[in-house]
Length: 88
Image 1 (cartoon, rainbow, N blue to C red):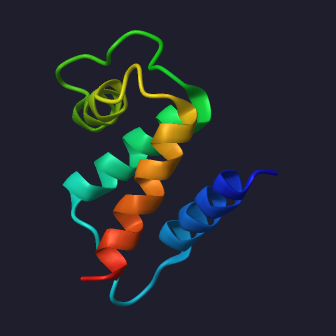
Image 2 (cartoon, rainbow, N blue to C red):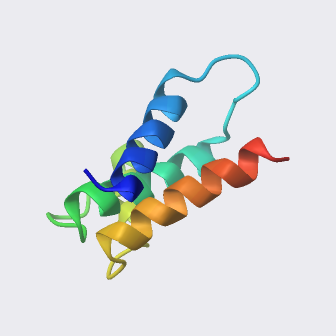
């Protein structure tokens, strides 16, 4: 497993299990979601959810915003975003 993939997995684990001080906003959660999906699945696929499906439409749009970004670049952005938050 590459070093990038290992660091990405550690960052994902941190976010999924974080307690206490780490309370991300919904906007930040969507940003991490979009990067995670782009890193693990590539470009967005499927039909965009309807207007009244607010949560899934927001998730789809977050993922769609990273369309064309390589898996490795998405992993690195995910890691960099988390590190930036930790250093604040």
